Amino acid sequence: MYEFLTGPMVWISFGFFIIGLIVRGVRYIKGLDWKLDRVTYNENISYGVKGALRSILFWIFPYGTRSWRKNPWFTLWVFTMHFGLLFTPIFLLGHNILLKEKWGISLWTLPESVADGLTVIVIVSVVFLILRRIALPEVRIITNWYDYLMLLIAVSPFITGFLAYHRVPDYYFWLMAHIICGHIFLIAIPFTKLSHFLLFFMTRAQIGMDYGIKRGGMKGKGMAW
Image 1 (cartoon, rainbow, N blue to C red):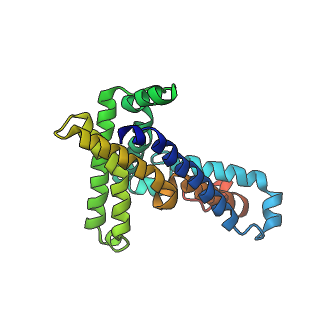
Image 2: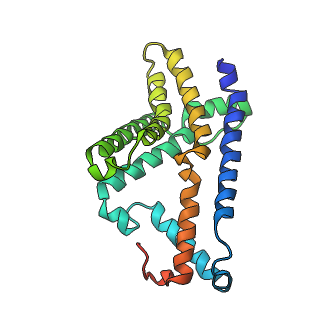
Image 3: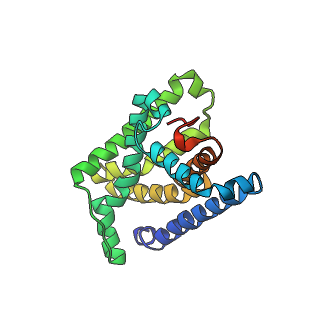
């Protein structure tokens, strides 16, 4: 089982992840109404590109937009959670040892204490987001079981990995659970709300382009920076 999960199943999971994201991206682009204001866009494409880049850059940095600054604590939690979600799996020592054994390549690795701390931050951040969804009426009313499932899928590799790393009883069970949860996470990304891994950048680019061309966004008019 271990050999299958760390061998062929890795190819399957990454296949779903990569091909699925490509399909989601293509479908998003095809879904746009390119006939609308085609002349305006064609004549002002440079402003559109600048607006798209500006929009993405302002939103990927903490407190770069008015919306982020209005909710400083929420912003802090969101950014620390996403930082841990992205960088911990990529630069984890154990993952890179496995990568070296299977494919002969390896990346720079985080100190184990740092990776352990980031794992705890991710888990605590998800718990915070769950409590926020329960406690705030304006958030609770738009939350359903699907939103909790997405949070569970995102955090489960970190919980199981943390338990396996610290050698709790039934180590092999938690190791297998960690690997399986990791595969579920990868496969789920293109087919669920977790696809904002890609679509966040595409929607921000679209909005930024629209403001940059049609609303004077490059001068800061009407944009929520």
